[in-house]
Image (tube, rainbow, N blue to C red):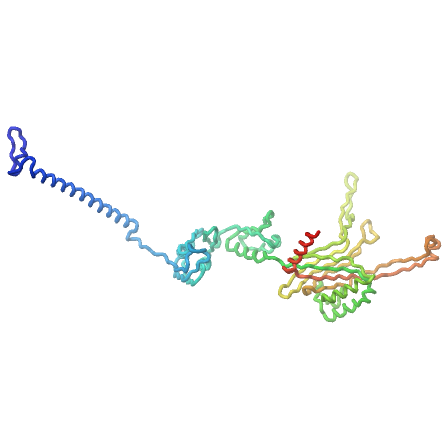
Length: 474
């Protein structure tokens, strides 16, 4: 119970003290203890209230991120034997992969995650796929998933790009061995939407179109771009009198070869070799050596040319030993009264055109051959020179190292010979009286020996060593 001082109108705190307590007694200590307890209780309440609020806030955030109304679907995973992070992604091998009716893009993302590779979708394949792979590398796994969807992938700088087969791209293929012009001819019918061209500066083939078709053309280019085999063609062209040819037994050689049908001849008119005017024979190396020794030891034989040339498979090789003879093809008078002439040149001499084709299975060489020997005659017709020529065109098949002999190219020359006494025989009246004048007809036959040698890598190495030796010694 509190007492109030009537004079001052305020409460006397000393009256609230229990009896027996002084101003500085135990009562003051009790009040201070209670105040400290109240402060501790207030601080604990604040801390407890804040913690509960924080936990409530975290719980509310978690529920906002993963609402109960949205189910979480776990992506299919693949069990691998080794991860891409531990080695090359292309070499990682899948131990066991099974996907049943999963979207293709989900499957690809799972494979990319398992291998640890980056994947970019230029077009997304959403078609459901079902695959079962065992011990398959990454490339096979990707192809298995994309094959049924009409999609393809490419790897560039460690990143896998997935795109539709109709995605248009441009690729440049640089050929190391092939001829871009020839390749372009074979790829003109590439299909609709395909553009094939040649970069004239670098000699590369530029292909534009859907990536699936561009890849097919690229595969064709890789198959065409390989080192082509080469053939060294050794030729000898002789001019021999028919009498000497009979003495050497060449007539008998022609007869035996035709009877045995030892030559495969493909003439433009499909004639029987036994009924053609040309003579053909195949000679082994020892037969060839014997005939050349016999031919070279006679006086009535003239070696016109002995060229050698190396040609690629299917590429024509041309040899010309002679000259270009000019002649006026056309003349016209100008308005000012001058004369304008059109001059052309004709190849005269010894020409040989050979196109070899190699059959790697049989080791045979099919050659398209065109030998020609021509010369300018004395007489001219209206200023145009008369040119006498002996030539033949044929196609034959022989083995590597065999020699083909072409004969039957004959010519008759008419000449005059005069013999008389010296000094006196030069006087016109005595030239006919004391001289001996004869007119003779000389028949000559042209013999063409052609030997193909398929060039091997070992031959090229030996030729290089010989060239290096000659370069050092000279």
